[in-house]
Length: 345
Ligand code: 13P
Ligand code: SF4
Image (tube, rainbow, N blue to C red; front, top):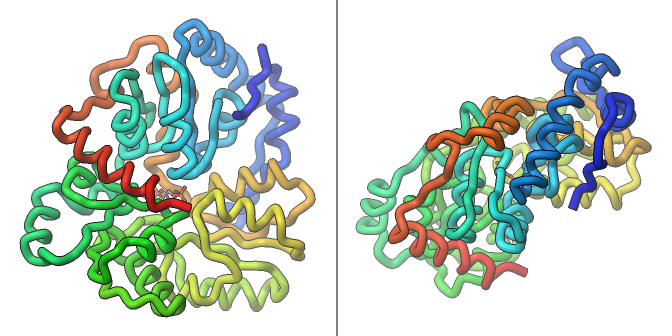
């Protein structure tokens, strides 16, 4: 659990965030003390209301650092946050990420109020497929086990057999006792999955859907070659939502939490992190002695979460902020999610 101080000062926040040094295009951006002083009154208000209302704030690593280090109670990847959602004792969960992650929390905590705080809480993967399409595919591939990435809506999960996250996809699919797998919605992760199963000598016939993540599909092998020419000794770290040619030329491929673990334990001249900018920012804050090189890409959905939105949702949530899932859908989607917990390491 992240520790949030009783009452934070601008200097406290600045001491944390001043290490963030992100290259955007040709210029470098950083937090100023003045900016941190502007954030702090809202941060302290959120932390007060959170306590009064017995609410807990779960944050994905891709959201802005003033949110993670100002008001977050738990920060992590989709898998860790879904486990946190299962374990938290609070009346309300405020999920600072995107809608499908809030839905996951609600599936596991039907009795709790779950709210999301982004003004644009979509995700190009979750929005790529709907339940009707899955039903059609199931008719077309009746012998296949339908495996969905956690980046899907509750309705889609309800139509699938087993859910996976970027951190456990290879392990879970390896364990599924069927060699016919239909993976959705991420085409690039599906291709990476098929390659990994082949590499492990596991015989699986893997079909996959056509969705992509707008952030990770941007990277190309040529980007890696360019980085390697400029910084020949750095380690390249990528996410399994990237292209196969990117993953094959990376030193490490993993979920956002696995990337953090890799950076923590690896001695290197520097790291290039091919994922959303929030993770590079976290790494710079948490490992000030490691060199995080190069640029990153923004997810506009994750970045639509702001301190102001969080405060408003805590004070006066609207029906749009609240996650509701039809009980019949929730029960079936939770079954798909629980199958993941059973197969997970
Ligand atoms: P992680 O589960 O690795 O945090 O990934 C979630 C996501 O949306 C990646 O784009
Ligand atoms: Fe979705 Fe990609 Fe944003 Fe992750 S980074 S939430 S997969 S659009």
